[in-house]
Amino acid sequence: MNNIYLIGMMGSGKSTIGLLLAKQLECSFVDTDDYIIENSSYNSINEIFKKKKESYFRNIESEALKKISLGSNCIIATGGGIILKAGNISLMKKTGKVIYLESSVENLVKNLYNTKCRPLLKNKNLTNELELLLKRRERLYNNASNTIVDVTFKSKNDIVDLIISTVKR
Image 1 (cartoon, rainbow, N blue to C red):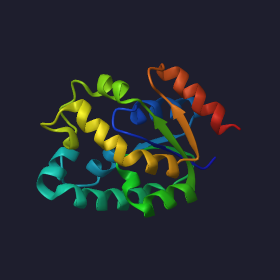
Image 2: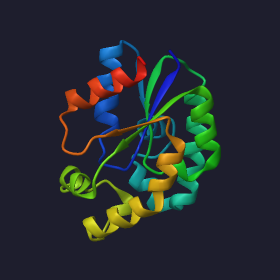
Image 3: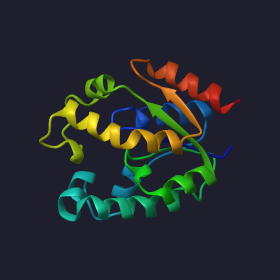
Image 4: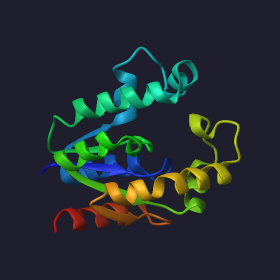
């Protein structure tokens, strides 16, 4: 099996679903945000955004993806903005299957309601900001993906089952 990359908005469940999927398929799991923190001198993605800004983060995110993509048989939960760089999209497509976890804004708001660790949402109206981000990114998610899985108000197990049936086709 090649790698499986999970893309989508923050709050769509990429990390949670990725971990469950890896257990079910008995393969490795990597969360790109966790990988970045483990391999840097920063304590959080928030800290990187605060000290170095988003463009710096996007560059180290791309470098992390290059290293992670060298492996195989791995489920990779990506950051929501990984699709903002065309090189990331082509690398993911070349080294695996890209699955877009599509979610409604209402579902994202429900999942992110109490979050304090999302730099792009800090001090902003949650619903408005998610609508804007989704509007800017949705075409990129659709174009980057091999498969789209609607996760809106579905159980984690149902989502994992949908992905597994898609991957086995």
